[in-house]
Image (cartoon, rainbow, N blue to C red; front, side):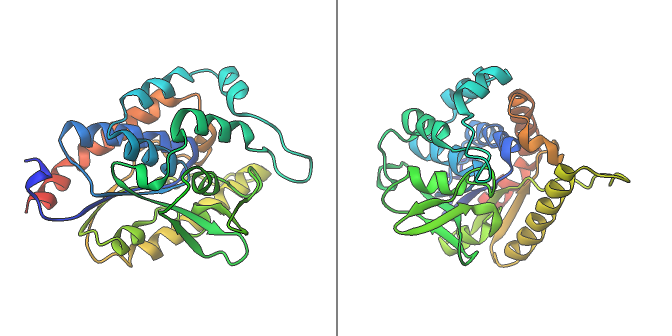
Length: 271
């Protein structure tokens, strides 16, 4: 049953989705428990963080423990929240950058990873997808998570980059470009929600962003010619993107969705 005997190249695509992306941990747990080993990881936004951890360590055990320890809003606030200048961005991003530098990257570069990794960001000027796979690891991650208006764009090599979800929120096409025959795709498109008669400004903006994500994913997914197995954890309301204190339920949602997809994954790997 293990895919160690399979000659097919397998890519794991971890899409963006804010706090919903914590479900990636649950998905990886199920894949590892069933000896599904991937040849490359493609990460966008929070998928770049969790994908990088897996690519560094080959597991997510300590990552799960760390994430579960951030189970209250005050601890999250103290660790990650640093407000930006009014009229610029909501957050400066320095706290999360320092956290990732100390707890995840620790000076590593792409060449130090156990598993090949691709990180997707968006060129701020052109809106085109940018795929990082060489040299520095931290700055591409910071670019990939830099949601417009929440974090400032990140300067890499004299160009500015922002959230990969703007151009390619669930970048299955990158797995195809890496030569993968099979793509295990974890996506967080929000399920359809009832539109309120008088929606708030935040609701309108979030809903519009989700519509753009959904359109981009449908367009890009059509460009992958291999076998796709789509995993969509059921906790996919738009507002869940910001509920970082609900880490346990997201991990469980990822496990449940991965277990449901597991027979299809194993069949495609071993056929």
